[in-house]
Image (cartoon, rainbow, N blue to C red):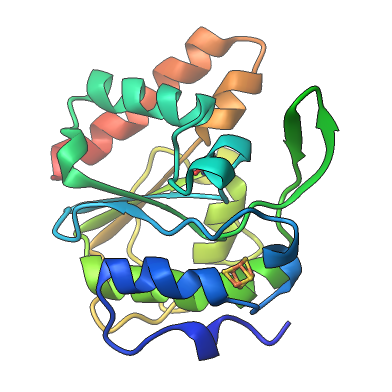
Length: 209
Ligand code: URA
Ligand code: SF4
C-alpha cells in the first residue's frame, strides 16, 4: 500500500483530521468500512489509549471504543482511578476490517502489518497533536505497531518502557505501558482474573499521571 501520507493535512486540528480521514485511500480498508474513525477525547489529555482498529459498532458510530470492548475499558479506567476526561482514545488503524457476519454483526478481522504501516501517518498526526505524557498500548496489534513485530503482549504487559526510537516523534511520550486488549479480556475463560490484571496495569499508568 502507498499509505495515508497524502491525505493527512499539515498541522491539523482534530476536527480537520476527522474530516480528512474520510477521504483516505492509503490502503484497501476504506472500501468495506462505513467511515474512518479518528481518535476521541481532549487533545490536552496526558494519556493516550491505543487500540487496534474500530469494531462493528465503532464503524457505524464513527467513534472509537463505543462497543463491548469500550464499555469494559471504561469500567476498567474507573476501577483504576483514571479520569475519563484525561484520556484520548484511538486505534492504530482507522477503518474497520471485517470478513463475514454473525447475525447482524460483522466479524472483525485483524489488520495486517501492511495496513498498520499504511495507516501510521494518522496516528503520528494524532500523537503530534495530543503530545501525551504516556501511552497505554492495548494488545498485540497496537504493540507491534509501536515496538515492531517482535512485540509479545504476554511478555511486555504491565511494565513501562521508553517510547521506542524506531517510531520517531518530534515530542515522544515519556513512557509507554502495554497491557491486554479489552476484547481479549472478553474472550478469556477466566474473565474476572483477566479483568483484574487489566485494572492493575491501568493503575500503574494512573500512578504516573
Ligand atoms: N477495539 C479496538 O481496538 N478499538 C476500538 O475502537 C474498539 C474495539
Ligand atoms: Fe487510510 Fe488507514 Fe483507512 Fe487504510 S485504514 S484507508 S490507511 S485511514
